[in-house]
Amino acid sequence: MAATVAERKLLVDGEWVETGEWQEVRSPYSGDVVGRHPVADAALAGRAVDAAARALAEPLPAHRRAAILDAVAHLLEERQEDLAQTICAEAGKPLKAARVEASRAVSTYTTAASVARTLAGEVVPMDASEAGTGKLAFTIREPIGIVGAISPFNFPANLVAHKIAPALAAGCPVVLKPASQTPLSALFLAELEHEAGLPAGWLNVLVGPASVIGDVLVEDERVKMITFTGSSGVGWDLRARAAKKKVSLELGNSTPVLVEADTDLEDAATRLAQHAFSFAGQSCISVQRIYVRRAAYDDFVARFVPKVEALRVGDPASDETDVGPVIDEGSKERIASWIAEAKQAGATELAGGEEDGLLRPTVLGDVTPDMKVSCQEVFGPVCTVTPYDTLEEALELANGTEFGLQAGIFTGSVDTALAAARALEFGGVVVNEAPTFRADQMPYGGIKASGNTKEGPAYTVREMTEERLVVLSER
Ligand code: NAP
Image (cartoon, rainbow, N blue to C red; front, side, top):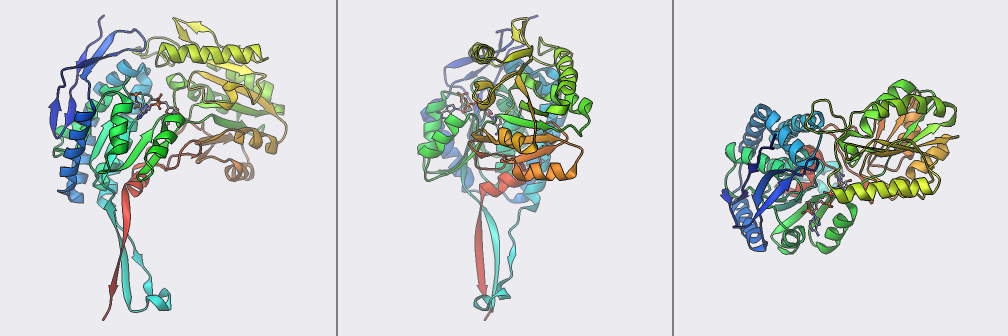
């Protein structure tokens, strides 16, 4: 059956815009055209910033911003299935995972609405020092200004929602550039914001050449903040080029998890088999490196590998599919070459291969820390299993990466969990759940090469507002 082709225009200054040049969006699974959109250029990006500047000059009160966010959440709740189908079609994300993403986007909007309603500064206890006596002081939170938002392909709806919903909560107009491979979900959300009554200029969505639109966001001084989610190389380069702006970065990881012998191995194996391979490992916190206490290693592997082999690989549009394609042929070739390189250097393939032209979930044993599958972000359906003898050794292995987004540990001991939470150099540590876990109100973000910020509407709004102190002198 031929795929439905969605035609979506760009949103600039409250208008749906055509540019005369159209770009097709293709399914990563079948190669079929699933949508098309106009292509933006630098001039249109400039017009989008002009529109955002006009919006900023006419601030919306918090109650209106919150009401719009609630209205989007409501519309999205009604159209979740349409959004899930769009995500599945353009990203090749299995429908069950796409449905979870669509429903999480509802929660991102709902949370942002409540943040908009409760956004406030704080009272400063001025008479706590002699210098402050006779003064009353408080802070207010002012919108930082126009936000340039750049998002990746792997959560094409919810990671867009994590930028545009908090921006509206904070009172900041946005110019959004979604990933070229997956622009349709972002334009779908833009349609809902438009329908929910968002005034012109508050959200502008441009799809086009990354460096052209990126350069406008970097160079236009009216854009005060760039919020970027994507790969480390692009992110840190943007930050270096936009030295005078706030640049918040949500980047990659090489996610480790420790499995202690005192844990429920069946439970750990089940959760990890599911989460190392959801969306074919293309999540920034996909489980990549599993370290298992040597006493439990054989038992864990004997439970884990059959569960991985039982995952269904195939058409993402099927309700039964667990693992679909990676985003493009180039990514598939890179991942396959990393697996081959590891095997050549001595790694053992405990599960893997290809099916239906797709990479099967791959488990590698006998790996060393210097192999690419260990020390770099695979961003594909691959994980490693490695035994350890002491907790210290495991923590050192887990920390032995430039990344620091999220890590995990399975253990029956609170003491061990707390020791690991303190020692793991990551933005988040998840205990007794796969470290792929994220709920949208959580403060989520990395340290080291993984980034410099936290997302989650309340935390993003902090980043997108500036704290201003007001001091009143009592006379
Ligand atoms: P990517 O290649 O870095 O692309 C991300 C976005 O940046 C896309 O919109 C891309 O546009 C744009 N871009 C590329 N070059 C640019 C430039 N010179 N100037 C401005 N924008 C530019 O990343 P991806 O492959 O889409 O996503 C995968 C990466 O994102 C992984 O490393 C993953 O770990 C990370 N990620 C992190 C998080 C987190 O929350 N920490 C969440 C999800 C993903 P085009 O698509 O047009 O090239």
